[in-house]
Amino acid sequence: MTEKLIIFDTTLRDGEQSPGASMNVAEKLRIASRLEELGVDVIEAGFPAASKGDMEAVSQVAQKLSRSAVAGLARTNKDDIDKAWAAVSGARHPRIHVFIASSDIHMEHKLRMPRDTVVEHAIAGVRYARTFTDDVEFSAEDASRSDRVFLCKLFEAAISAGATTINIPDTVGYAIPSEFADLVKYVRQHTPNIHKAVISVHCHNDLGLATANTLAALAAGARQAEVTINGIGERAGNTSMEEVVMAIRTRASSFPLISTIDTAKIYPTSKLVSMLTGMIVQPNKAIVGANAFAHEAGIHQDGMLKNPMTYEIMRPEDVGVSSSTLVLGKHSGRKALYDRLKEIGYNLSPPEIDTVFVKFKELADRKKNIVEEDLEILVSENIMDTADLFQLEYLHVTSGTTVSPVASVKMVINGKSVKGESSGNGPIDAAYRAIAKLTKTESEMLRFTISALTGGTDAQGEVTVRLKEQGLVALGRGADPDIIIASVKAYINGLNRLAYLKRHPVADGMI
Ligand SMILES: CC(=O)SCCNC(=O)CCNC(=O)[C@H](O)C(C)(C)COP(=O)(O)OP(=O)(O)OC[C@H]1O[C@@H](n2cnc3c(N)ncnc32)[C@H](O)[C@@H]1OP(=O)(O)O
Ligand SMILES: CC(C)C(=O)C(=O)O
Image (cartoon, rainbow, N blue to C red; front, side, top):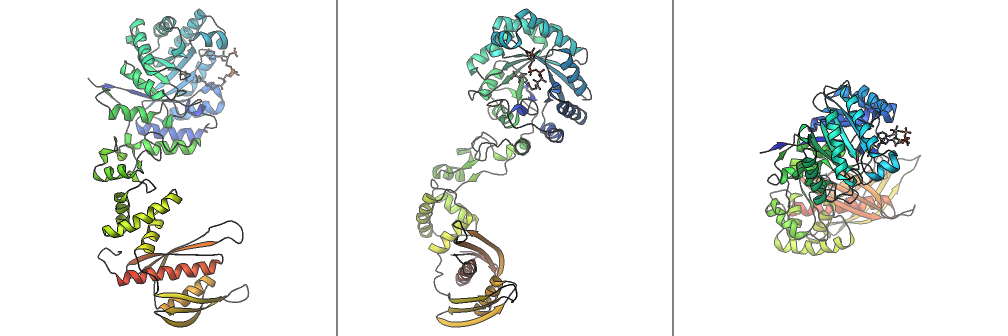
């Protein structure tokens, strides 16, 4: 039978404990609204006793949300609980989350309390929280390093005092999956009234095992997962929501659990959290990393083109990523190259593909990312015969603050030398007008970009133009330390390619 998995998101509390990730009230509100839209059951919006700002943020989140429950964290003392309640009381579904540490190392060195005092504090804290709301969660901090017999005694005491959710945190990310699953089973078996509470787990990623431990705990009977978007959180972070949600969905037969998360909103939410916290998502991060649905290896790309299920266990659309990408690089094969060339308008024959492929591999050995423009240049340099229609013989421009720009151009066109001149808005415009007159072309300039190939004022400038004429589009490129000459070279290069396309008409507009 499929059971509901409660998603407790702590991006705004434990996630905010990532160094440098703190959020202001407006940012927390924005993320909280997005989490509610995503379908999160409980949003831990902060630790109200931490600061006035956090108190304000939690209370505004509480007032704004209507579907998700809003939790505020508190130590077991009265003041923390009063502040937590003051902050969450405006929520339609308020929760107070009370915690105290249960491991010997924490009790002895941090709390400096004997076990019995810790039990008393837990009882007092939970009981006091219950005077405000029926929804009280109790966490035994550092549970995974705690004495199991004592842990169950503490949980039983918290349940008797009114806790409705019992959380088992792996606070320092020390657990391993088999042991953590065993701990959950132990708690279920040795806490007499555990059936009165939901069992929750909260894992940290110090050994990179947060998701694995959470899943092991769910398989062992936990029904609430405490998670954060992108796995952000104290130190190495928390269990990432997207990983847990997609794991139980993708491996449904192993996890008879269902969450209310609208998975198609995962990626935009990840982006928002990354932007507002400044925590960049590593490219190889599962589900939401830039490479999660990108394929570079030729054998994989071939498989993807034949059937995406050969190399993808989830559909990118299911997590809100628009599509998979086949990245062209040194590991790519002919199929991916052919496919991309076709996509950008070049329908090459097999021998032409072979020619471009050799040059493509040479380029990929030198350049990490091969972009569309590189492909266009490869095709035009290796397939198109653009050698000789228009050639520049000389260029002379006058320009300055007191004269209007004029360009004189001498070209060889079809073997014949011709001269012309034109004025323009600037020296490049004047030169382009003169060349257009001489070549009798009427191309439209779709794009003009200029960049420095080297540093310093003597840098080599590279100009790229994209020209359109009679429905045909061609790219031209030129480089020179003089940017006006580089611009003219790029323009003539583009006109030669357009001329080639006119001589080799094909149905789809390009070769
Ligand atoms: C595992 C977790 O992630 S727990 C949540 C951690 N998050 C945070 O700590 C962020 C917010 N924290 C803060 O802003 C501050 O620590 C505050 C405002 C809560 C407390 O600040 P201060 O009063 O200056 O105390 P400080 O942080 O220096 O020390 C913590 C005190 O709380 C005590 N304490 C820790 N946990 C608990 C608990 N669950 N119940 C009761 N007391 C506790 C410590 O023993 C220590 O007490 P002591 O001062 O008697 O030694
Ligand atoms: C407060 C608890 C749940 C916590 O954050 C932890 O133990 O890591």
